[in-house]
Image (cartoon, rainbow, N blue to C red):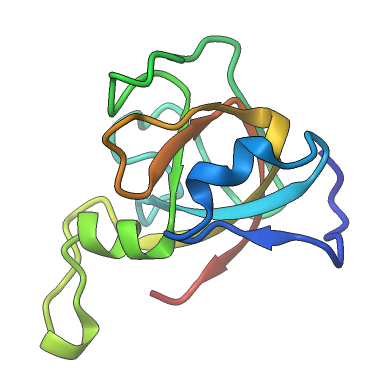
Length: 135
């Protein structure tokens, strides 16, 4: 994955994430991932996700009936905020393990599964960590 950000990068939103598979396979898209304060995945703390890193997996779950499976799970910003129970206007804190919000970038061809009942989360086999964002 190139470290350069294309000027034609698409953001994954609630409106377009299910249609991404129809795009050109080399189209670069972006989504979000939350991690712990120590840059680890909240459910698989063996992987570290830091800006500038390219993360990939060799095994993933491509069955769309499985909402949460093997692979690199990424999502829309709205989904990340909802799953972490973070509501800045209500003063509610995030769940433990959801301290950092990352912007990640990948090609459409790296998408391995968009679960049937997904409300914004999906799996990819590789992504580049662009940067940390403020919640």
